[in-house]
Image 1 (cartoon, rainbow, N blue to C red):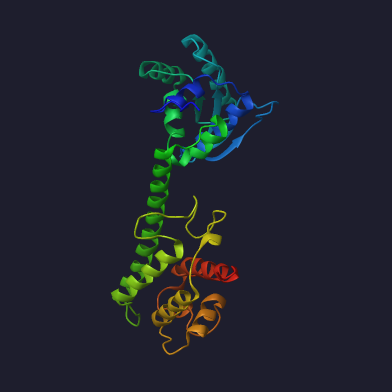
Image 2 (image 1 turned 45 degrees about the horizontal axis):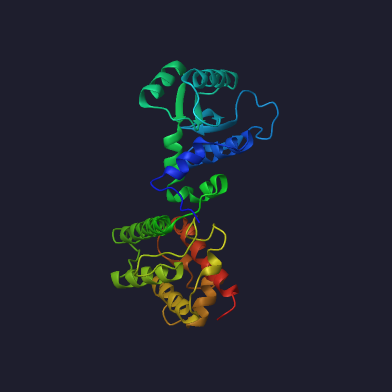
Amino acid sequence: MNRRRTEGSETFHRLQQWTQDSAASERLAAQLLRVEGYIGVDPSHPLGGPDGLKDAVCLKDDQKWIGAAYFPRGDQTPGAIKEKLLSDLAGVAANQAAGLAFVTNQELRLREREELTQIAEPVSLDIFHLERIASLLDSPPCYGIRLDFLDIEMNKEEQLAFIADRDAMFKEALDQLMEKFNAIVNRGDAVAGTVSVPLGEMKEFKSILDTISGSNAYGFVYAPSGSIFGSAAGHITRLQVPLAELRAFADLLDRITGSAGVSSSFALSTVVGGSSPGHVSRLHVPLGELKEYEAHLDRIIAKRLLLPHP
């Protein structure tokens, strides 16, 4: 079996020698716009039909933009590229938009990009040229898109990069959660009548969260892309939390809420049900700031209890 070209050449050449139809190119363009932060990307008619001089509508910096895809096979002349851009620019005024995202599989040098930008003035122009698209598709968040549209699977190096990228995203989300909780606890030291949580218990709390979410000392995370609290399909079903550890987690919440002396089984039912004395709602901090945190924990524990025990 022939080994695929390395250093990004395979992606570059498959884009350059595009053999798929316009529907595929418009759908790929929509995916790339989402990856680059465009919001509410709404394709027009990839399968054909009146599109109102636009392939997609989206938002950038709270302003309306339109998207246009241009994926001919092989290199085109500068004149052909300019002609296509001018026809797409007409859609900006027709749709009362602020800018145009021009997505093309053509290789454009810096000078050529500058010239196209000047032609578009005063309209804002964002050019997705061949090298930019190839670079995006060869990044971990886009491996799935690349497989779908170019049939390029991950090699060993990319698998390692994908795992590292998932791990970094998970740790960042967890750190943000802990920062939010720490901010609530630390603010309690300065407010009369509130309680603060000992540092040792906070470390234990974080350690249990690490185990629940699948993190480990080797830096690998087994959750798929998406929210660490289960918005991505399949994440919650992969949790591996022993029942004893859930009880320890419930006991810790009891200590935080000041309901010492309650049994672990009662504490666990309290965490899941959320209505008995000693629940998280008894924390002496603003309840509004705990609602999101409480909902996440309730969902994690409740869904884990529905899974068959090993």
